[in-house]
Amino acid sequence: MMDLSSLLYIACLFLFVFGVFNGTSRDKSKIKKSAIKAIALVAIALIIVAFI
Image (cartoon, rainbow, N blue to C red):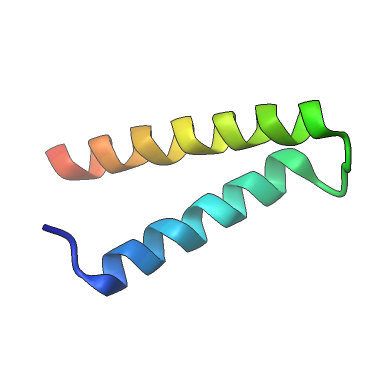
């Protein structure tokens, strides 16, 4: 079970990665693709960290 600080860290990491992919775009399809990429990268990073 994750504690609150871990959830906040994951949320901040997601927002940072999402911001990097999306930039300042307001196009809804690009926002959706950026969110999917950010979720995938954060999930991969968490899996890697879990096995280290």
